[in-house]
Amino acid sequence: MGYIGATPISVNAGGTGQSTLTDGGVLVGNGTSAITQLAVGGNGTLLRGTTGADPLFSQTCPGSFSFVRTVSGSNTQLSIINNDNTSVNSTAVLQNQTGGTSSGDPMIQYSISGSTIFSHGIDNSDSDNLKVSISSALGTSDAFIITTSGVVTFPLNSCFLAYLGSTDANVTGNGASYTLGSVTALTEIFDLHGDFNTNGTFTAPVTGRYDLRAFMYVSDTTIATSFVITLTTSNRSYSSTFSRAALAADQSCIISVIADMDTNDTATVAVVANGEAGNTDDVSGGSPLLTYFCGTLAA
Amino acid sequence: MAYYGTGPIKVADGGTGSSSLTDTSVLVGNGTSAITVLAAGVDGELIAGRASADPLFSTIANGNFNFSTSAVAAAVTCTVENTSDTANSNAITYIETGGMSSGDPKNFWLISGSNSFATGIDNSASNRLVICSGTALGTTDRMRIETTGAVTWPANVAFLSFLPTDVTNVTGQSGTYALGAGTALTEVFDQGSAITTGGTFTAPVTGRYDLRVNFTVIGTTIANKFNAALVTENRTYISTYSRAASNANQSWYIDGICDMDAADIATFQLAVTGEAADTDDIDGASGTLVTFVSGTLVA
Image (cartoon, rainbow over all chains, first blue to last red; front, side, top):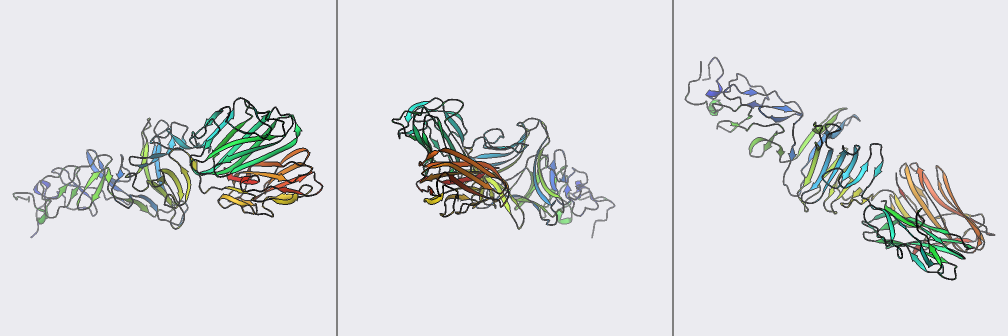
């Protein structure tokens, strides 16, 4: 025997107050009034809460949302997939967007809980540069910057330039080896990663390929005939020889290489002049730079 | 005709089992018991399913989620947007793993059936930020940023090769010596496999290459001019050193930031003049390198 009333059973009697329920429609309470039937959600919509109002199916959610779980040996994964393989415009996009030029930064953050965090995104307060920062805030410990015009810098990468600020007199000429920085401490112009010592020793912070260049300016010669500059790294040494007739003229010596260095390997530079009766030749310092050592981590 | 029972119609009889259904609350089945009324959601919440429990409005979902469809010539987009245009109003996608013993927080880009790249923190390699080919950090790393800021490109073009033994009587009068001819070079490193032991460097992609070579000549008698050449397909670079006729050893070099197109080659040559014949040798050694070539892709 069925219900034969003229109207649907009301909510306060335990009914729904509705005579038909939409196929696929989520039901929502409405006090003692007939229950509310939400519009059926379309593809790609999720049911979201709305403060003081009925929930609704939507493609936007006005707030933050986290996918969190503790699972050993497996990923927690948010995927954005476009399965179409017919059009070059069938893209899959993760979009981070902020409100305008006065807003904060759109970014992705990678974090290992209790340990390291990297942030990657547009620094709205710094010319809209794309950055990778070793912190939770772009602009703090920036390691990689691409400007909107495409210029790329690595502000914390290993990169140095140091020079001899004053002349070291009588350090070579008759076979004595002069190591840059061993007499007068060098003056650092920049040392982005803190790898260079003013005693002339560069220490590689990580294993890599280092662009190293040194210029040594030998002066006060009388009859010097040969100059050998040597770059000595822990893995190997590099040498270049400059020869001439006996001559009282200044001579620059240059060495340049992409060198393999392992973590904590060191590099120093030395020059040996020959041909004099004694070690009466100087290595000139001062500005403009005459004797200097520079390098960067290149690969 | 109304219902005149003593309580709400039970679920077993086709009712809800409740006399009032909270306004804006989603209704959920509860077997034959009165239907469950979920706590109303608020702004920013989505309804999240839970195994063996009622769903609930939350800002957290305990699991993976896919936004997946086949959208022809359109984007599938997940947007994280903060519409406020005030300072510190960021829009952040935040990816975190559990701690030092966990896996890697990462984001990857995948073309189904083709290539993929990933970015994230390699928890098993000093917490460096990595951009790699594939989806597993640490296997095919293309760029690494250490937590100190040092940046390396483990697969970028970078090479260092040297002449291990002397090559005799190859220049002095009219002969031009091409580095690697006669005696094969020894490779110290060759990231990108771009240089042969025959001394030919091939650009893998169009770009700007920092190339540099150092020759050392021995066995001279009256040599007085040394021409080093860096020969690329787009252009040739020459560096000349002249001296009084002498039998002294001599190094000479050339370097440049060179424009090269994909598959262009570069070779490295030295021509000595002043001798009566091609009696001069190129000095090769494995201890301290005296004749060597190095380079890297810089832009």
